[in-house]
Amino acid sequence: MLEHEKWLVIAHDDLKMAKLALPQELFSPLTYHCQQVAEKSLKGYHAFKKQPIMKTHDLAKLLEVCLTFDRDFEKLRQSVSVLNPYASKFRYPTEFEIPDEGDAELAIKHAEMIMNLVLKNIGT
Figure 1 (tube, rainbow, N blue to C red):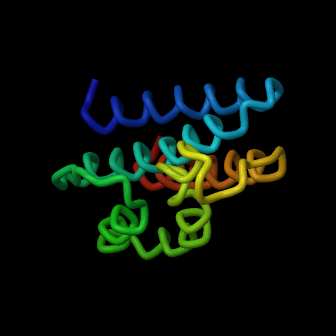
Figure 2: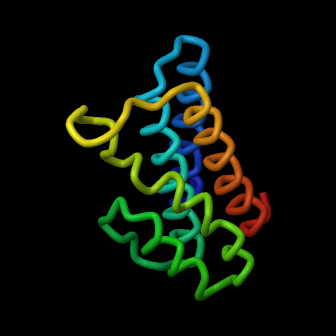
């Protein structure tokens, strides 16, 4: 299995986990897994383009690298903006409200958008 394929397999597992969490109303971990879908998908695209994998959870930084290869990734700015805080936002209850079902469904939607665009752009 090629490196980019490994990233995408793990991203797909995170997406499956998020979808399993939805009916159980596990919204905080769900949003975290959606951020991970996005991060691993974008890193998978970096691997596909033979770029070094950045050690960051910042989706905006990862998106910028993708944009150097394909301006089509510009469509993902809003999705990145929605998902970026979920890397740590709900791990601690001191600063933010706990996500609700609407937040969870939106997170899944944006995670799928990112993964699908990556898959389209690598031809799978």
